[in-house]
Amino acid sequence: MDRSSSSGDYPVDNATYNLLQSLTSKLEALDAYKTYEQDADDQSSSLFRELAEQDRQHAQRLLEAVKQKLSQS
Image (cartoon, rainbow, N blue to C red):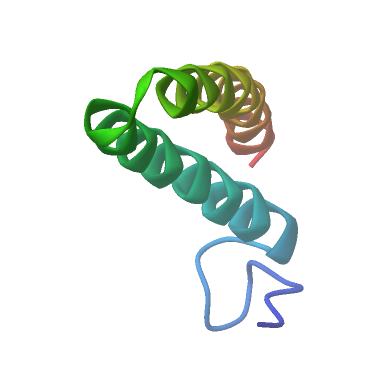
């Protein structure tokens, strides 16, 4: 979706939108991994914990980027 300007129909520019969508995806994945881990055997459970930790770190980085982007607005 082209959101190249915040002065048009959208309240945020494309770059901010992309950061927000990426953060949303990571947070949804974290929620799913929690469920998957509970349903998994030991080996798979360990994998889901590892994936969740990586996505948690990515979500934190994305959150910081969103904060920075919004403070520039």
